[in-house]
Amino acid sequence: MRLVLVRHTAVADGQGLCYGRTDVDLADSFPADAQAVRAALPAGPWALYASPARRCRRLADWLGGTAIIDARLHELDFGAWEGRAWNDLPRPELDRWCADFVTVRPPGGESFAELTARAVAFAADAASRHAGGCVVALTHAGFIRALLASRRGVPCADVFSIAVPLGSVHILEPAG
Image (cartoon, rainbow, N blue to C red):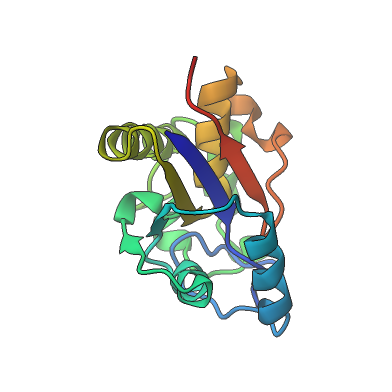
């Protein structure tokens, strides 16, 4: 199965905000951003999956497909930090998480290792359901980095070395 991972397009008010699961509005540039995503996608047919986040569902609607909404495609759950400015987070908690985001959870949230486990589970499930086909998954930077790192053998601690710009398309060919 060919897996095409798409990061949602630009958001309107996310600057400096911790918004993993928080729904934020898309930028006014959405129509042009969505057109660029569409142009970068492989020719169909493909099965379309989307994160429950509004920014991913709206892109799915724009692409014209009936998307399967899958909670495993959500961004990292930042728990009590959701929707707050990064600068307003309690410094000791943030420092502890930054020192080991792979295994440490934000208060009430999930670790990057947990995100990676659900990303790998999604990919395995999609491969079993769509063997020989193509799946397009509309998702988030953390989810994409988790799968790319897993596929490329990049340690989780180094995932931020993987560039995942807004509106980017990443194609994973079948393993082997």
